[in-house]
Each structure stands twice: as structure tokens, then as C-alpha cells.
Image (tube, helix red, strand yellow):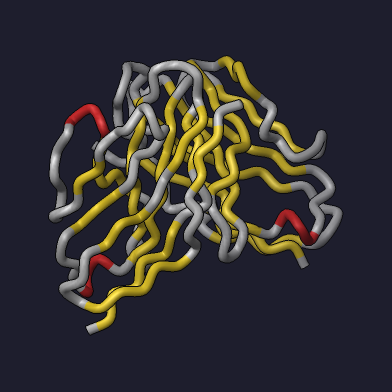
Length: 114
Length: 106
């Protein structure tokens, strides 16, 4: 089947606007992860879901960031009142819940705040 | 706290030279460790996992619980190995190190 799909691929938005990033995981994958990757830097953990629940939201940078998941499927990451420092590639990954399983990554959404 | 440390941002070698990409982790439980690779313009993908004790594309990684390390090694680097390499620790969540860019020169 299809891999992890993220949309849009690219998003340019004006400072202060809200944006929604979408992730469609592989069907049957109960674990879903969001990461932020700034230019030239590593993967910064944001949040993960087990089913529709998010046990750990500690990685969200501020209260402008939120995420939800429905139907143990699609997830959306919302950034309110975007700032220039939010510019980055946002990556989503999904995996089965069992031990030592591989996480499959989407191609990312490149967000540019101007 | 759970943490993954990759001390080298950039590692440059010539083709045929041995390579070792360092990874240290901090976790009090039984770790699940992985190496992921990102080739230019491609998605991040799994290279190998410690549980499998496998060799992929000539790379191996041994878990050393005493030193809390999971270094990635290859005896003879190839130009096509040039990529970003990320060490990852899975507990309840999956966290990554900051990555090491490997450059293999001809």
C-alpha cells in the first residue's frame, strides 16, 4: 500500500496566520510521530500519538502548536499565529506499536513564514 | 532523561577508508536502538536496528550497554554512503540524535 503521505509539500504563509499540516499514516499503524527539522539541524521531537491519544506533548515548542488525530488515522498539526522561527520542514512518521518496529517517514512539509 | 547524542556533525573520509559514526544514549530501561539514513532528496529511512544484529550495505552497529553506545561502522566507505545518518532511541516515543553528515570523497 501507500506510504506515509504529508500535505501540503510546501507552504508559504504570512507571519501571524494559522497553518494546518496533514499526515496520513500507513493503514494499521497505531503510532504516529511529528518532528520539526530546521535548516541544517536534526530532528526535534514534537509529539506522538498512540491511537488517538497523545501521551507526551512535551516537545511542542509553545501553546501556538497543537495536534490531533482521529480514527487512529489522519493527524493534523496546527500552528497558530505563525512566526518566522516556525519555518522548517515538518516530518511525520508512523509505525506499528510493537517493539523494535521500523518507523516510516513522510516526505515532509516545508513551511516558510514570511 | 532520555537522550541521544551524536557528537560529530560532519565526518569526511576518502573512499575505501573505515568509518565510525558515534552514538551514545541515555536511558535507564532496556533500549531499542536504530540507525536511520537520509540520502539527498530522499525520505528518512531505516538503515538497521540493534535487535537484528544485521549488516546492511556493509554497515554494522553493536549495542554496548556498559558504554551506552551504539556506534555505526563500515570497514570500507563508498561514495554512495554519503548521506545524513541519525541514531534513534525508542522508548515510549522515538527520539533522534542531531545527525552526522557523512561525506565520502573519491
